Image (cartoon, rainbow over all chains, first blue to last red; front, side, top):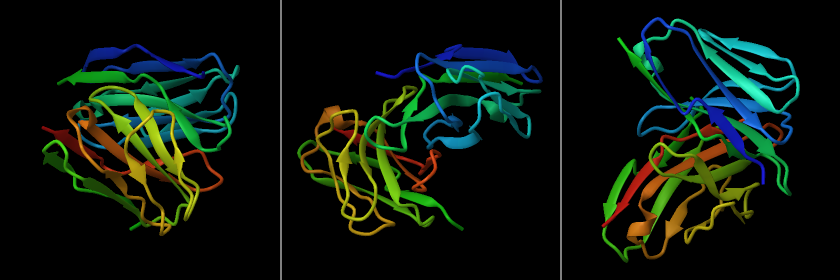
Length: 113
Length: 112
């Protein structure tokens, strides 16, 4: 079945550093979504990408839809302590039902003040 | 303000009890979903609904059941809770034509 692999699994950085994480798949996706989840809360949608090559920003966050449609990248610039959390990529698949999402394995981000 | 709500946020119950986890959304979305997530792990789809009177099993087998009598309401029921049901349960909704799903805050269930 389809799988989304995220890397790195975890990152421990200093406040102010930039962060990069990515998500890869063996299958093509037509939409890429990036979510952030704080401990004990539900995931919050950060960025949605709809077109191969698309680059979209949301404040200090920038995400790109890979040209091959099999990967996506999320960058966070000038990290701050509230960026701590787990970042998930996700993509809809159409195996008999639309709008079902596959979630990546997640990247845990820790930011030291 | 349009939003998605889940109650209770935390629940600790004994084995064998029947429970219902509530989920409501005020966004007018046709599609709703239930996910199960262990701490720090991926989300696994256990139920989804295209609209009123429509419910389907997700990718992860679950002993829970769901109902969709009203568009805004998608409750999940466990007839007899067991310790293996201990997990976080997340509800989500989406517009019919879009891939983005919006999540509630989750219910953390502990069965003793």
